[in-house]
Image 1 (cartoon, rainbow, N blue to C red):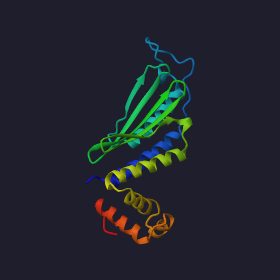
Image 2: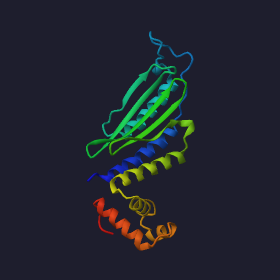
Image 3: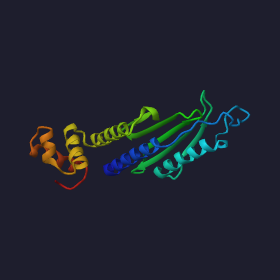
Image 4: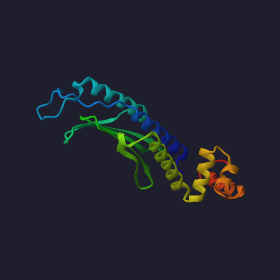
Length: 201
């Protein structure tokens, strides 16, 4: 049995990290930034860029369970700094939050989760294409994916998620919304709790 509540907690934390990253200022490197012998700009020579990068790293370091963020420099058409923070559940890597911050000020956010046999990218886009609502929707979808993988029943997954996670126990209101009987919803939620190792409803 996997730690479903632990996974859901990490999904939500990753969502908050995504929102925090969305708020970061990401100025481009100055035209006068010196370059190394290979033509790669020396990122830390530009205070505005480097201070912004340090803020991004602080956010990622707060998220990671290892206390270490993997940082790399990439010599591309537009050189960029890249960082990935990892988070584990049940002794295995479960979540990755990554950022690419280009010398031109471009900024890509990537959030993904390991579900069953592979990585599922919930968010992988440039900041200008993302809103807080986009992140919220994708994190909600990731929560559903975690539950569906464990419960193996779409109806139980949805009823449990809506009542135990969102409506906080209001099974009657959810039953009315989905035009099902209160007893049907209650039975599905009870079954889901049993599968997840929780107390009987």
